[in-house]
Image (cartoon, rainbow, N blue to C red):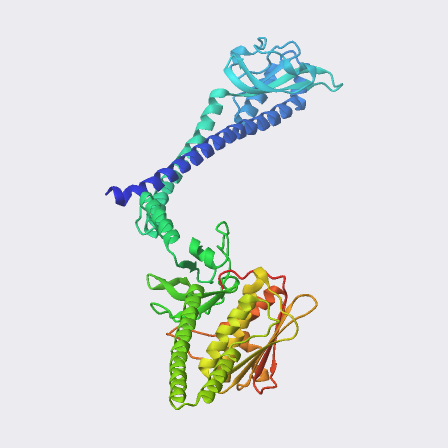
Length: 527
């Protein structure tokens, strides 16, 4: 029961407190305004009554009669009854009353000061023979504008209070009804919010959020959650790292297309296939899954895994396998060479054996040489490995330098990324008995000009821009994983470096890739 009513009780209590403050504050304000409005209404009425009596010709003429009250008293009582005030008292300049609600008080001196004899109008509360009253005093002027008396019109404070309480009673009833309706609506709102939160209590929500944050930040794979408009609503630390963003960055609200090259047009299945994605120059595997709540798709979750390290390991494994196979082939070749030399010696053909040994040594010396002008050790090592792969694939591989190629230092990784991907594509395009040529040259600014030719099928002019698109490839998948990112990386590295890449026809009959890679480039992280 505690769990079922905890959140509703808290919401109802908070809303009721807010509603009580608002209702009480509104009631007090309205009561004060209403009280002032009642007084203002009676004040305007009393001023109008006093001015009308003070200006009546019959009243003015009666001041010269031997018995003014005989004329003024009936008029004052008639006006008092018609205007719903408590009294209309007319006095002369000496304060002698000519009218009063109590006839016995006529002829007596007024019990309150003659405040209007100075020519001004008086409005205020005073206590007289009838009690405390809210009153107005107006001077009575003769034809020559001299002040000959005053008219005092008032209403008792008890009557004002009664009129005020009648209005306040209706106000209190309205506020009470509003409070009851507000309480019912607050209860319904609390229940609605509780249902929208799936009946989870605040403490449970806090624990769930803490557990979610700990889980998200502890997962090694990147997690990115998108809303139906494909904007980021949540991501973990691993996702920030894989997307090359700092931990202080906030990706919330950004379209996923600004962060990641990935196709989200997946069917509403339980899980989407793994697909290739690039975050800048980082190679990622993305698994796209819809988020289904109550049978509705409310968003998308993307699970990111770094393929860069996997790809590097696979390449290193392939290189090791190529070296092992080359060593086995050389072992067999060396064994055959020894058997041949041994046979020649047994036959006594010493000169023939010596000649055979010289030819074999010369072939070995010529098989792995690179241009002496290539001073970039890392690039040279890469090209030696690619030459071994080309030999294994039956491809003739040639490297030449047009002038001296100096070491790139900290920027050598960009060269390796570009040359490695271009040579791999060229070897696969050339096929067995094909030819791949690599030409390197430095211009006057220190930029490296890379040209890779092959005698493969080439690239049609209308497809030359498409080859740099992500996953554009003529090769099949490898191990169920997509391919086609090599040329995309080449394009991105050169573009970031401020260089460029051009595709054209090769003199060998296939495709030619020409790259200009400036020296002043940043190191490509994790590519």
